[in-house]
Length: 500
Image (cartoon, rainbow, N blue to C red; front, side, top):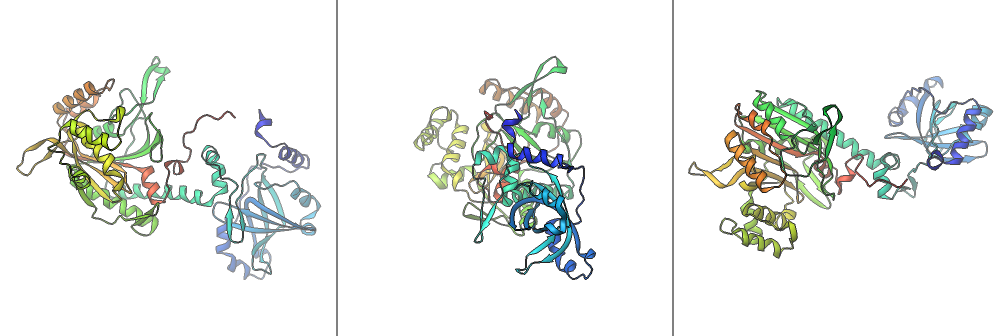
């Protein structure tokens, strides 16, 4: 098997290195500078008269080698920097020079030596000692530059997704994107913590999956007699139990699993954030949502203006509030309040919806027509509010001006940006009797959908008025990094098993 994985020529060089007494995989090497750090401090180092004071110890991956007789110029790169290394046979000695003959593009080396500038002004480390830190026995793609343009050896997206480490080696922009993802998540956490929220954990494996309608992934637990369990499709119901238990503000960030389709904005495993805040409603949470997203953008990008796919949006609050029925009326002229389920179904069919995707009920028809006719045009940012009760089983009915409660609409919003929904939020339903009735109705309508009676029992202990929100972390990262596909912001996206 190893013969199919490793390059024979590189394996031979590895063996030659070992035979020479070199250790191509040492236990440690402690640089004095990163390569970017060396550049930042270069003028200070170059100003020192004493050669020892100008000496640096650096490490990096070999990007190119240029040989000129008994000298070599080796370019090395690390995470966010690069530097040239000057290797002179007379200086490093016969053994170290012989070692350089066994190096390949992609090998990681460590260098000790004084810093200087060449006649062309290039910052350079003159090697006085050279060590192999990792001999690459698999070919490594490295970006090349010519006439000010960068050329990447890794253009196949299949390889980029399947072997993400190669993508990061070859493409500094990919490394930057995932660094920004980490900063975005950290900033979200910082702001939630500063607002008094407590980060908590919820189970990934559940006896009953809830919080949405989605096909779950199933597994079996040996320690429980091979009992069937499900990977969670939502963070919602366990978080609400924290609210029941007396925690006033909680949030969680973690992976969610839905055994469904894959496209530019959907992936079977994705990262969600959900938060719940006692004694608030969906109006309060619209303000918190827009403030959070705008604040994160400003902290990470330096401003609230976001550019994505050639479009532009300003995330500064306040965001537009647009009722779902009004959005449909603006786009199609149809008054959904007066339309029947059949008329909504026909309107969807006229816009290309067909087969199982055609809606059966009035509420499903309203949402399907909105998604077909309106969704893609919502560059935003905009909160689409007030959804049909039929498709919102965990949400309180909408309060009407006369103080009564709507029979059709609930207090729910979905934030939209660049034509894509990035979240979902409710004024949470807290009446346990009504919740039980809604769950049972949902289970009758959707074959096989379970009811989480443990959650209903917890709700029966009393839950204060609460606003709850879900935020899609992957989609937020897509829009803040101008990345068109969700697979480009997920480090290791799901792929078909390779024949290799």
